[in-house]
Image 1 (cartoon, rainbow, N blue to C red):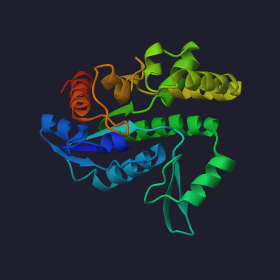
Image 2 (image 1 turned 60 degrees about the vertical axis):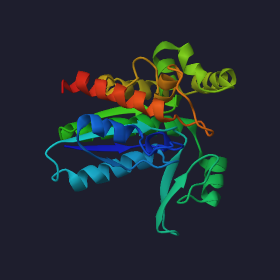
Image 3 (image 1 turned 90 degrees about the vertical axis):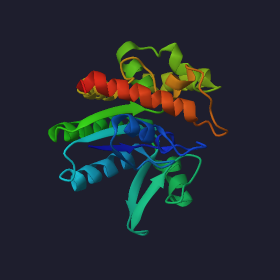
Image 4 (image 1 turned 90 degrees about the horizontal axis):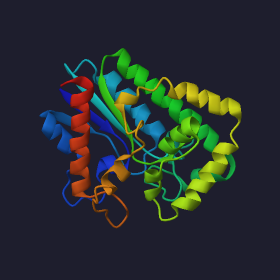
Length: 253
């Protein structure tokens, strides 16, 4: 059996003293090999693109495969540059090794849209879910950041659970900004996203029903953070245990 994981810095294991992020800890519990392709700053588009590539190239190499994806914030993206002949990562704030500050600054200045982020995220989640189910591959998804969960609960319940507000020191301002954005969405877009969400397998999207991410799940257990806000060893141990329990529950394995 092979465990494949992908995500951003929270799955990569940034700021860990020992190089034992949750994918390594979970693979030890499952007694299997692990391929962790996560890197800091990666976008959901890249996470899903490279997951599809990996599964297509390796589906015949393993008797059994488990895929677990930790999604990042929706505003990150990527595109292929004919000029650079490579994929370019687009992210607010930091520009990583494979990114380009010129493209990032222009993208967020001219083209960025929260509406587009939202629609593409849920469409891509549904697409990769359908792809994995078509190949009878066991999988779990979860969010490291709260934006997708905030959106899901606003669309369905017109409110956001209080425990999603613990993530930022300026959470009240962030919530107000998000509420204003959601209220301004075209009704057709709200309707589309609700229809897409109705097809997401909630039992395999960890935290989607109960509104928790990897981050606030561990913070609620008083796990320590590093200098740059990443969860440390105890948080990764807790999360690996939680995912293991979810696998047992969902797949009775």
